Image (cartoon, rainbow, N blue to C red; front, top):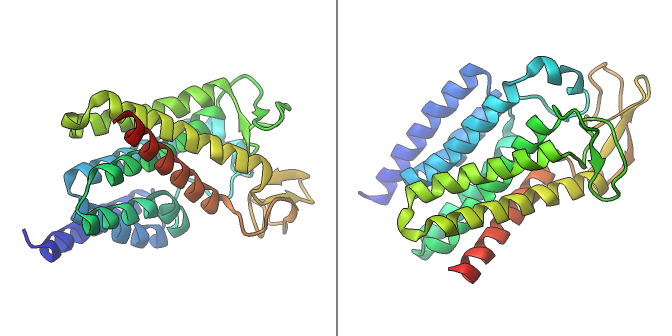
Length: 270
C-alpha cells in the first residue's frame, strides 16, 4: 500500500477513535485533536502492532482513571488535571510514540524503535496504574527520596500497592507486545516492558518529589499540582520545584526514560 494512503487511513481511524473518546468524556476537545494527530500517525505508519499498544494504554488507563471515583474524589485537589485528558496530557503520553514510529519509518529498521516504543508505553501505563491504584492503599505513602510519610496523592509518594500496580501496568504492555510479535521473543518483550516501565515510573516519582512544580492553596493550606487556581478557586502559590516542570513534562520524561531503558535492555539481552 502507498505510504500516503496508509497514513491517510491511519489519520482517519485516529479521528474516529478520538471523536468517540471525546464523546465518552475521556478526552477534552484539545485532547481529541492531539490524539487524532498523534494516534493517526501511529496507526498509519506503524500499523496494527503499534496501534494496539497505544490502545491498550489508553483504554486501560482511562478505565482506571474513572474507577473507584468515590474513593478518589477527595484527592482531585491534589492533581493538576482530572480524568478528561487535554492536549498536553495526550502529547506527553503519546507524542513520543508518534516520534518513534516516524523514526522507524525513516530508518527502515523496526526492532530498536519498537523496543523503545514498548518501553515508552510501558512507562506511561505503569505510572498511570501506580497513580490510580496506589492512592487506594490503606498504608500511608512514603516519599521516594527520603522515606518520609506523606499525604495520599502527594507527588513522589509511593506505596507497595502502587509499586505492584506499576509493575502490572508495564507487564500488560509487555504481554501485549509479545502476543503481537512473538517472533521477536516473549521474554525479551516482557523484560523490556518491565524494565522500561519501572524505570520510567521511578523517574516520574523522583521528579515529583524533587523538581516538579508544587503549589500550596493559602485558603485550604493544601499542597497541590494545580496552577493558577486550586479547586476552591483560590490562586495557588509555588512552594518548590521548577516553575516550568509541570505534570505533563514529568510524564514526557517518564516516557523518555522508559523508552531509553527498554531499548538498552533490548540491545543487551537481544
